Image 1 (cartoon, rainbow, N blue to C red):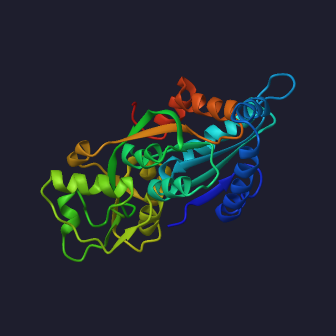
Image 2 (image 1 turned 120 degrees about the vertical axis):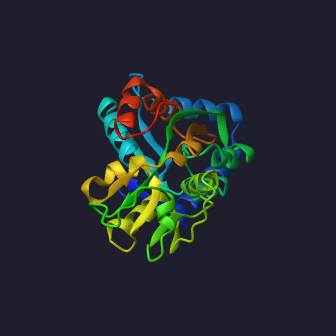
Length: 276
C-alpha cells in the first residue's frame, strides 16, 4: 500500500530514493559527534535573522489531506523560506515507511495503535499528543437512492458496500462499530485507505462506504452522508509527534504547534474533526 504524495511547491522524490539519501546522511552523522549533529539541526532550522527556514516532511493520515494542505499553505505564508512537504496515506503504511527508514520530520496518525508502531520502534522524539478526533459516517450515492438509513441497511442483498482494510484506522473503527451493533458485513472490497474507499462511491463503483465524516464533508455533493449511532463507539484519536532525525527541528516543531493551536483547531473542526 503506497501512500499518496503531495508537495506544496516542488515534486517530492520517491521514498526509495529518499531512503537511500537518508542512509547516506546517517552515515555522515555517525562520523560527527551527536552533540554537534543536534546543534547543526537546530541552527539549520533558522536563518541568520532567527526566522524559521528549511523543508519539513510530514507523513499524515489520508483523512487529514484537505486540512493539512490548508495548514501547510498557511505555515509557508507565515514563514517565508519554509516548505512543507506532505505524504498522505493509510496510517499503517506510513508507520511502516517511517520504521523502515523513510525520511520524515512529523507523523500524524489516525489512531494511537499505528502511532505506537513508531514509538515502539524508537522513532518518535517525545510523547505523541492527540490533536483531534474523528467519527465514522456512511457515504452513499448523491440523493441516497438506496434509502440507506442505518448501519444494518448495509447488509441488504444487492448493495455494493466498501470498507477500509481492517489494518488501517478507518477499517478498524468500522469493525468496532459493526461489533457494537452486533452486525456482520461482507464488503465487495477492502480499500487501502479512507480516500480510496470513498472514491469507490464517488466513481459509482459502490453504493456505499463506511468512512470518516470529514471525508464525506470534503467530497461535497459527490456523496451523501448518513449518521449512525454505532459510530459513537468507534471514535478515533489522532496523535501527532516530532520524529527522530528531523533535519529542521525548530521548523517541524513550529508546524506541530500550528496544528495544535487555536488557528489549527479552527481549520480542523471546520473540516468536521472533533475536539480532542
